[in-house]
Image 1 (cartoon, rainbow, N blue to C red):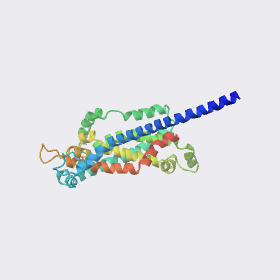
Image 2 (cartoon, rainbow, N blue to C red; image 1 turned 180 degrees about the vertical axis):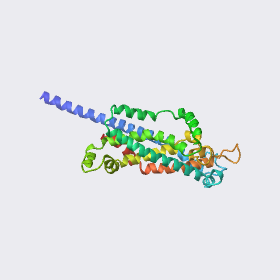
Image 3 (tube, rainbow, N blue to C red; image 1 turned 135 degrees about the vertical axis):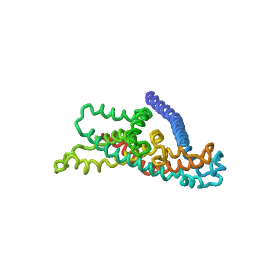
Image 4 (cartoon, rainbow, N blue to C red; image 1 turned 45 degrees about the vertical axis):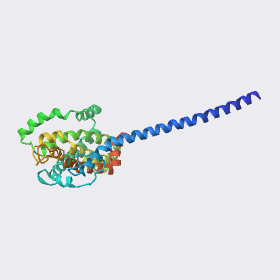
Length: 302
């Protein structure tokens, strides 16, 4: 009897203790969730507020551009009209950026796809070391190669030309393209290509008809990211583009001038920033799942 009573008392005591602990755990869990939400909200505001301020400033007239109001009192499209008129017409810079970034993306994809496939399939000794060297080249400071490139391009007559931008941009985007595509090719089953070659396909035909369609998500992701790298680059463009004939948008915005030397055209600069940035953000938001999937597929399946 005593033993049974002791067990019953112990069970009731344990139940009361668990009931007392449960609310404390719920409170701690609630505080953790609230803390995470507050942290995410602060981080989102930190990242999005500059973009919001740029949009708001682009809609303000000349008399209100320096005001601190978060909402423009009388929204105006005057700044957007200004950037597409006169000697600083942004359409020329947009054309130059599209040509340079598009050409860079095509070259980087062609060379990067072939190089990544070769690195993934050929019997290369110390493959990890080779890929590490490829990745390390992307960490080299760009400013260190500006003087020799400037001297070289001057001798070749390339200053103020598209190729003076495309060549360095390809060297920046190619290591990234090779690494992303290499990781994806490594996780593709080798048996698929072997079966295609048994059916009479050459290695190149098997690559074009079997591997590339399967690697389309990674290729698409790489194309978007390489394009953004080339589109946003400023250092090389500011050094090698001297006139409007080859200036991309990053340089054109930096060289906007007002009616006098002392005037800073904040409104047109903000409007140009909106025109240049918003399309990229929209593309990334639309294809964000494909981008994330293309970047993570090789690591998850390989």
